[in-house]
Image (cartoon, rainbow, N blue to C red; front, top):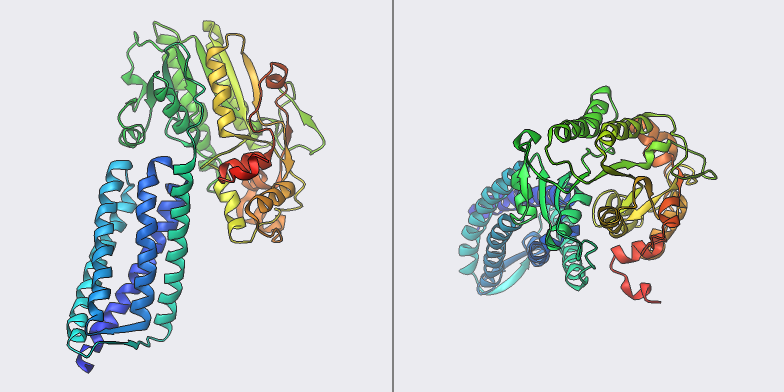
Length: 489
């Protein structure tokens, strides 16, 4: 058997490479960039991932710790065959449900090549082991065995998590569509493939409205909306006689990301101000002006404020880059008022939902590392995505709704209160407190998004009788984590 030892060594080495690439694929693509565990259209893919990951855990642990002789070779070979079949099925489902980014396609190719090599080598080893008397023996690969055992535990936990996410999606009842029952509308939407926009466009389409998207990636939009929405990559593709009843402008690159260098600031301004200015130029030449224009903004308009200060729609703007960004964003739509459009400007708080900012905020809590940021006294003004969609639907249908509205829930809370609420909902300890200095050093001015806040109240919405379904953070978080039993009590 000594002459086969290098084959087994190579197999184990390639298995480690497979585990590392798979871990990167899961964390970077499935979690950070694609957010599969929060995407209803990925439910079948998540179900396959759950089964495949648990089997991978068994496979990693078995190959790292055992040698299979005689009839036992059929057991491990059968597990490999099932694993390969699930992977091929996953490829088919992925291609039908979403557009994979180029990096994910390249990585899947590398995984397939590496997987073919390691399973081919392992087959050579199994042929020799088959000729030995039936039995199992302990394999010892030193640190490599420990590493693969750790990978086995990690991939199993990932599989269980994906399975729970798929189960949560299947049990989640269909939300009432606030756009249903409205007169048919033709709507132009920017930012329609984002976290808020995807839900908005899906509900508009489900309610029978016609949607045109301004999208940089029309193929992605086609996957997201199963070809039901028309996409244009430039406003130049819209002719002057185009008729839209409404425009909903949600375009804007995420503000939380790379440090706010001069180049990054220019990108953030262009993605908001530049797009809005292009829309206003199109509207100025359009023969048929839309009747309603809904313009997104953000509560960053008010700048960082003391938590005791209540901010309504009449409060003055603050200082800093976020305030400048929001002011210029809103001002870029001002020329539209000359055309007599009914304009609604929504200053959005942190939107809680199955995507966006909330999952990264909750992630440390899942691992028992939740806690406050800085002193924890900064106030977080937020809104559940479902309530935001209901506000958008009301803005489309209510002719009396015009001007600036704070799109925030009534139940503001401090960051420390948020951490305690998440801990309560997830049943996790809240103890890990991150000082402000490292965040300011790492993120610069962008750290104000985490370390500063403002107590923004939805004064106009409350005055006009809008009933929030999720006025308090605990009920919102229980809804989004699938803890419906607690919601009923």
